[in-house]
Length: 410
Image (cartoon, rainbow, N blue to C red; front, side, top):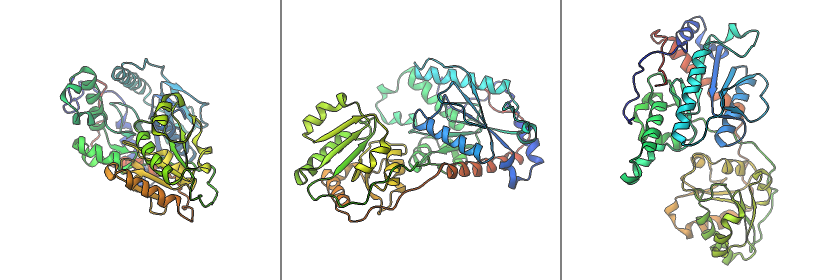
């Protein structure tokens, strides 16, 4: 196993791209999306995580807009959505992770090869689903589209050589390169501009197949009531179960400095296990409330500011939800959503700006007299952006040579 170019397939697997091209020839490309049949591949289907919720909501929105949607997954973690055929192919042991990813990709590829036509059971399936696109969210090797939801594993190349010499690392690098640079890949979709930049840096082989980022939607919850923050108080929120990556230590340093000026200021920490951070809070001398992992939507109305000094954040759903609730934000430039934070919504800082710069930015937001405008992005908009992408791919396939072949899982 190596990290060289994606392997040439030793044989072809029938995913019927040839059928797709024939069908596209008889479809007006301007209306191609109306004929698309898309199969999304994800290990866990349901609202059980950031990436999983993205797939769950996007597929439901696509189906609501009239697309023919199927899902291939290990297991369904919620009631099957209406109008979507869900095919469960069995759960796979999660460790070692690289082997689990490889086993899932081979099992999913085998299912796709064994079911080359519409299996949704719809009466009009024959008329509408001759064109089938495979849209993966996993480390697959037989897909047309892949959405990349997090930082690439290839960033490990920035670490010491002793961190990279292992079968695990070699396997992960190979799986990642196969997913992004396989010969059958038509589009790579990052979920934020930051992820796009990382992919372009580590995988120039993607080239023109890099699509515009399609960020997740932000579901609006209860809004923060308009109010003036007391000059000696306020509530700063920190949201994130992975508190080390999301910069809780930086937040504590900033809040400790703020509490010198604002003795009534409170930090509301949502996500981490209170027992895991109790000693850190005590050492920082910060007055805080830690409810643990609860629905953060209900907490935003209590907050006067969301502080999110993340070291690495592929997107930053908590930031988007806070802005939707009209809570000012102060975040790091390591967040994928940073480009969506206007000067009205808050402030974006570099992690190297220094604690005093973060303290000053927080003070400015706490002292503001007006609430930010609400941030909005719907899942219907996300689905519409996917439709535009699918239509482009279908037009490209319509003009491509009729090989009828795609890569096989090696």
